[in-house]
Amino acid sequence: MKKLWDFAWGMYRKYEEGINYLIFGFLAFVLNYVLYFLFSSAMQMHYMAATALSWVLTVVFAYWTNRTFVFKSKNKDAQSLGKEFLSFIGARVATEVLELALMFLMVDCVDLNEYLSKFACQVIVIVANYFLSKLWIFKEKK
Image (cartoon, rainbow, N blue to C red; front, top):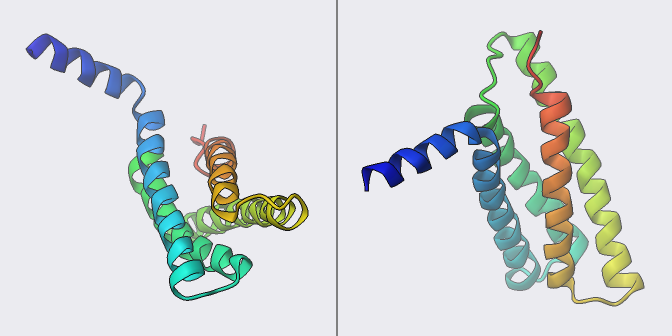
Protein backbone atom coordinates (compact mmCIF):
# COMPACT_ATOMS: atom_id res chain seq x y z
CA MET A 1 0.00 0.00 0.00
CA LYS A 2 2.86 2.37 0.80
CA LYS A 3 4.36 1.82 -2.66
CA LEU A 4 1.06 2.69 -4.30
CA TRP A 5 0.79 5.83 -2.19
CA ASP A 6 4.38 6.81 -2.97
CA PHE A 7 3.75 6.28 -6.69
CA ALA A 8 0.50 8.28 -6.64
CA TRP A 9 2.08 11.10 -4.62
CA GLY A 10 5.08 11.17 -6.94
CA MET A 11 2.83 11.41 -9.99
CA TYR A 12 0.82 14.18 -8.35
CA ARG A 13 3.97 16.15 -7.52
CA LYS A 14 5.27 15.69 -11.07
CA TYR A 15 2.02 16.89 -12.69
CA GLU A 16 0.70 19.03 -9.83
CA GLU A 17 -0.16 22.12 -11.88
CA GLY A 18 -2.09 20.19 -14.52
CA ILE A 19 -3.89 18.03 -11.96
CA ASN A 20 -4.82 21.06 -9.84
CA TYR A 21 -6.05 22.89 -12.94
CA LEU A 22 -8.23 19.92 -13.84
CA ILE A 23 -9.62 19.72 -10.30
CA PHE A 24 -10.35 23.44 -9.98
CA GLY A 25 -11.38 23.69 -13.62
CA PHE A 26 -13.89 20.92 -12.97
CA LEU A 27 -15.15 22.74 -9.87
CA ALA A 28 -15.47 25.98 -11.87
CA PHE A 29 -17.29 24.03 -14.59
CA VAL A 30 -19.72 22.57 -12.03
CA LEU A 31 -20.24 25.97 -10.41
CA ASN A 32 -20.83 27.61 -13.80
CA TYR A 33 -23.20 24.91 -14.96
CA VAL A 34 -25.18 24.83 -11.68
CA LEU A 35 -25.47 28.61 -11.61
CA TYR A 36 -26.51 28.64 -15.27
CA PHE A 37 -29.15 25.99 -14.61
CA LEU A 38 -30.47 27.90 -11.58
CA PHE A 39 -30.61 31.21 -13.41
CA SER A 40 -32.00 29.71 -16.61
CA SER A 41 -34.51 27.23 -15.20
CA ALA A 42 -35.34 28.24 -11.65
CA MET A 43 -35.26 32.00 -12.26
CA GLN A 44 -36.50 31.82 -15.88
CA MET A 45 -33.69 34.04 -17.19
CA HIS A 46 -32.92 34.19 -20.90
CA TYR A 47 -30.03 31.85 -21.70
CA MET A 48 -27.71 34.75 -22.65
CA ALA A 49 -28.32 36.57 -19.34
CA ALA A 50 -27.93 33.31 -17.43
CA THR A 51 -24.66 32.63 -19.26
CA ALA A 52 -23.28 36.08 -18.47
CA LEU A 53 -24.28 36.08 -14.80
CA SER A 54 -22.98 32.57 -14.16
CA TRP A 55 -19.73 33.64 -15.85
CA VAL A 56 -19.21 36.66 -13.56
CA LEU A 57 -19.57 34.58 -10.41
CA THR A 58 -17.41 31.75 -11.77
CA VAL A 59 -14.59 34.13 -12.76
CA VAL A 60 -14.20 35.34 -9.18
CA PHE A 61 -13.90 31.73 -8.01
CA ALA A 62 -11.54 30.85 -10.88
CA TYR A 63 -9.16 33.76 -10.24
CA TRP A 64 -8.78 32.88 -6.58
CA THR A 65 -8.25 29.15 -7.20
CA ASN A 66 -5.93 29.62 -10.19
CA ARG A 67 -3.82 32.20 -8.36
CA THR A 68 -3.69 30.29 -5.09
CA PHE A 69 -3.71 26.57 -5.88
CA VAL A 70 -2.85 26.07 -9.55
CA PHE A 71 -0.21 28.58 -10.62
CA LYS A 72 0.76 29.64 -7.08
CA SER A 73 1.33 33.27 -7.99
CA LYS A 74 4.02 35.04 -5.99
CA ASN A 75 2.71 38.53 -6.79
CA LYS A 76 2.16 40.45 -3.58
CA ASP A 77 2.43 44.17 -4.39
CA ALA A 78 -0.62 46.10 -5.53
CA GLN A 79 0.72 46.89 -9.01
CA SER A 80 1.56 43.24 -9.80
CA LEU A 81 -1.73 42.01 -8.37
CA GLY A 82 -3.65 44.61 -10.35
CA LYS A 83 -1.91 43.69 -13.58
CA GLU A 84 -2.43 39.98 -12.90
CA PHE A 85 -6.12 40.45 -12.08
CA LEU A 86 -6.77 42.66 -15.11
CA SER A 87 -4.98 40.16 -17.36
CA PHE A 88 -7.08 37.36 -15.89
CA ILE A 89 -10.29 39.32 -16.40
CA GLY A 90 -9.24 40.26 -19.94
CA ALA A 91 -8.58 36.63 -20.85
CA ARG A 92 -11.83 35.54 -19.28
CA VAL A 93 -13.75 38.26 -21.13
CA ALA A 94 -12.26 36.97 -24.39
CA THR A 95 -13.30 33.39 -23.64
CA GLU A 96 -16.74 34.57 -22.47
CA VAL A 97 -17.25 36.36 -25.79
CA LEU A 98 -16.23 33.09 -27.45
CA GLU A 99 -18.73 31.19 -25.28
CA LEU A 100 -21.57 33.62 -26.01
CA ALA A 101 -20.87 33.45 -29.74
CA LEU A 102 -20.75 29.65 -29.66
CA MET A 103 -23.96 29.50 -27.60
CA PHE A 104 -25.68 31.78 -30.11
CA LEU A 105 -24.50 29.67 -33.03
CA MET A 106 -25.43 26.37 -31.40
CA VAL A 107 -28.76 27.36 -29.84
CA ASP A 108 -30.18 29.99 -32.20
CA CYS A 109 -28.58 29.10 -35.53
CA VAL A 110 -28.27 25.31 -35.36
CA ASP A 111 -31.12 24.74 -32.86
CA LEU A 112 -29.13 22.43 -30.58
CA ASN A 113 -30.17 21.76 -26.98
CA GLU A 114 -29.01 24.67 -24.82
CA TYR A 115 -27.73 22.45 -22.00
CA LEU A 116 -25.66 20.23 -24.29
CA SER A 117 -24.41 23.36 -26.04
CA LYS A 118 -23.43 24.83 -22.66
CA PHE A 119 -21.48 21.66 -21.87
CA ALA A 120 -19.59 21.76 -25.18
CA CYS A 121 -18.82 25.45 -24.73
CA GLN A 122 -17.49 24.87 -21.24
CA VAL A 123 -15.02 22.24 -22.45
CA ILE A 124 -13.68 24.63 -25.10
CA VAL A 125 -13.49 27.52 -22.65
CA ILE A 126 -11.68 25.52 -19.95
CA VAL A 127 -8.97 24.46 -22.40
CA ALA A 128 -8.59 28.01 -23.75
CA ASN A 129 -8.43 29.44 -20.23
CA TYR A 130 -5.63 27.06 -19.21
CA PHE A 131 -3.43 28.10 -22.10
CA LEU A 132 -4.13 31.80 -21.58
CA SER A 133 -3.35 31.46 -17.86
CA LYS A 134 -0.23 29.37 -18.38
CA LEU A 135 1.27 31.36 -21.24
CA TRP A 136 0.16 34.89 -20.42
CA ILE A 137 -1.26 35.59 -16.96
CA PHE A 138 0.63 33.42 -14.48
CA LYS A 139 3.80 32.80 -16.50
CA GLU A 140 6.89 32.65 -14.36
CA LYS A 141 9.09 35.74 -14.43
CA LYS A 142 12.66 35.16 -15.56
